[in-house]
Length: 152
Image (cartoon, rainbow, N blue to C red; front, side, top):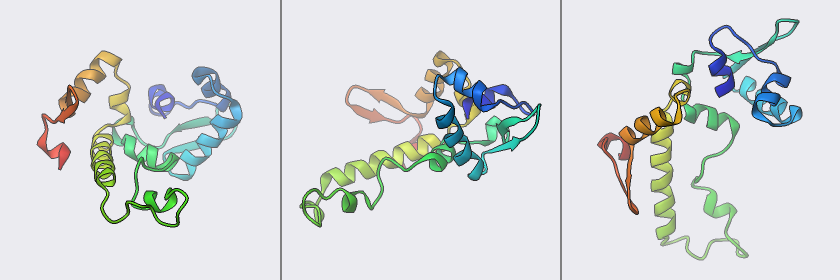
């Protein structure tokens, strides 16, 4: 998605171009692009000048939307049911402090990714550090937000 966003509005890239630029196999690029197209994030055109392009401008596509199309969240309510160990039900299903932590982590991740667009990610690392630091400030082992709305 970043390659397509960087190409700019109206410009397209082919599967081999993306494969070469990202250093990943052509079949894997094709698989990712198929999911992105089915998710409505990219469009494709056939022919000599064809290829793939972002369906909307980079400032209108949030990272959470891209990740949602490509895969699952870090933590969902069903996580404990799927990974209960050797038992049918997790031994900690009634009173689990770890589950509370993962729910909070997922909430912060969701809020951060929903406030970050592809245009934001086109910045260089230093500029992105400033952007991210304005959203969430990490100090030592605790997380402090300079934006209270982020952690709600």
